[in-house]
Length: 545
View 1 (spheres, helix red, strand yellow):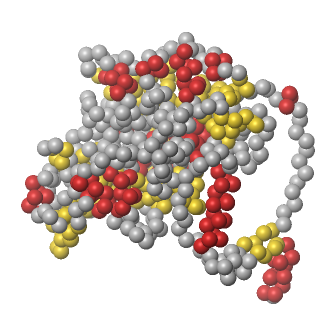
View 2: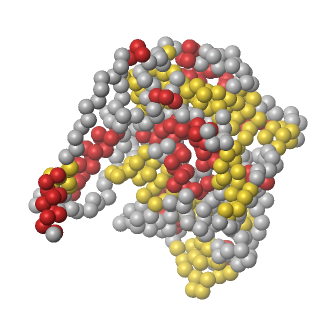
View 3: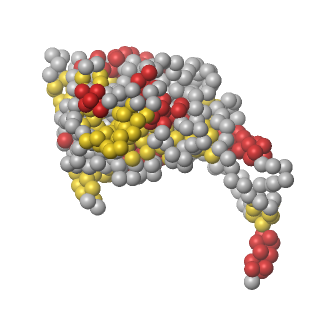
């Protein structure tokens, strides 16, 4: 019987090679030219496989015969509506005052349709609602913000002009968890009026009270309303309504004359989802070909109404961060890196959490996930690399063999669904019962929550480890109760500072001090901590940076 099965298999398939060897971790690489990412990835994979296997061994694979269907001839192109416009001015010419616009991209020049944004600035439309996942310059600067009535976004850190106009009462601001934001966009494209999500439960997002608009004197004019909550399986979820938009301005790498779109690297981000959500979608592209293949098409042309050819995209000037890190920060990052275990799928937040990736122990291989749509992120490349391959902080990065690029909605599916084993996050405050505050100081510093509320929304499946300095100036960051708006309630598993490591054991139990840096003492840690804690016996130590 076995012989018959083998013979049947060999009849329909061609066996190439005889043995299989599991691939070893590859050297990371950056995107370097304009050829197909898929082709380059396959070539790189094949070259590394060949170089890593002994000559006496061959990779085993099975190639099955498959009949290629004979496709009918395409109808003449003239039978399809012409989608290519001759100028950015023409592309945005019918945008009316009061319209709602989705603007794709991930921060400065990372898939942001800047030619369309500049044309919008010159256009006469006013009182616009601007919807963008990350509202940063150069897109969201004075010239564009002067046309805005409302900005809906997730992250504004570093945009001093937007913050100034918000506090001055010149525009309204709605901040949303990043995963909620992109799901609202996706739901709008799918005709789904509302959905439930765990992100934001127990925070201002649920309770209401976020200052959407200020009076010029600094008092709050408009606050966010509470959201409906329901329990499913014993866990609370918030109802969020879809975002409906009049226009979507997106950027893709290639298009064909049918409107099909193809993206490069992490420039998919919000672009891929937004391209499907506009009543009228306008795509800025670097190249227009006669026809993409079905396999190349990532957004079908049915969603796309206009194409603008912009052959000279923004200058590729993004560089890895060169800011110096303090000894305390390096100590935290090195200790946090020890949380990473072989084979883990991990998300690293910005700042200290991301720095930890530079200190992963030798022999430990983890798969790093980035919210902007990359699984398998590597270390920074040499200066001058293509910013279409970046981390969530907008810095150029590399990627490993076996990596994948995807949309922001796919990224947050992984996050909210608990498919990651660990996330490292920063903090403004941490409370005694494991609450996290990381996105807003009322009346002051308000970067937005970004993806943090989503990252802590499933602590039952994704372990939350916070990296933070023990003090901010003379103020405690580890406090009995958070005074800043929360990112999540009772979500933290462990906190790592330059002095100590604390474990959080659930409601009603005090945090447990499990490690201290070898140069300090428990008494010193107590004086720098704003909550009570118990001490493990034995108490471990770790090294300074």
